[in-house]
Length: 412
Image (cartoon, rainbow, N blue to C red; front, side, top):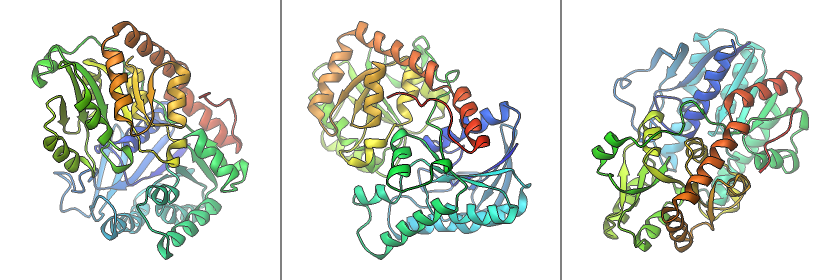
């Protein structure tokens, strides 16, 4: 089959959506399917177009043998009018990309942003093929519950677009059981349209490794007990809890390493400076291979979320990288992600935004290497059994071709 992926986010950008899409596409190509991608000039998460891509309206390149058509957009981060312009500029410019690709059998549209469903719908009409709407986040529910958009005409317009998008899509892919349940029970999407493709992990890329002593020397982490947060530093993640927990730690060898970027990172760095934290490091974004090297130095991985009903249906991708590297996960949050960690016995869970509980769990793992080792091995076994991209994509293709979800879902 031939797939056209329509997404605002794609490598060389670094982020959860980018890693997920790259893994899905790699597996489709490995299975013999043909893939083309229409995406934006890379600018996430800094809100600045990357060096080498600036000053261009269109660009065609090969990514791991896949043809990628890149279109201009207005680069911006955060919220407000500039971010809306960022979304809508790509909705429009991506239409030009449709003239540069071959007719697919399916169009895969990544959301958020929700607005890209407009381009997906027009693409489906042009090529007379089905479009698959991939729902990684229930927008606009998320912006309402996080208080990022006030009740009013704009929010009602977004809700109307959401309903229209679900009606027009031939299939809707849910990435968590919680999203799947909301689509079926609250959004009233017909069951035959809802497919299930949970986040997975590349178990060959993220794997247990002996400590990378060269990297430890390079970063000044020799002899340190590293707690690693690798991912976006956004508002939803509530990383303030990590900073407050760091202040409560008494073991001078424990260091929290936060690698990534995002809208909240400048504020978090300022906050850490004001708190005079000496046991917390910020690192710039790096490719997945570098993250694997960092995990080789870590006692545990860290995942944090704010206290919001929104995250009842969230399973952060970052927890799977740590589990696949055989590292226990310190999960600060509730909902589906917390239940997965507890079910797999792959880490310790603390309530959202509870710095005291997080600090206690950090000390529990750093003071008990045998427990950390056991939980890390549990996590590795879990992802090998349930979350390898090979089995997930095979099951998803079966659902797609039959028009009905098949197979058992991962128990959490």
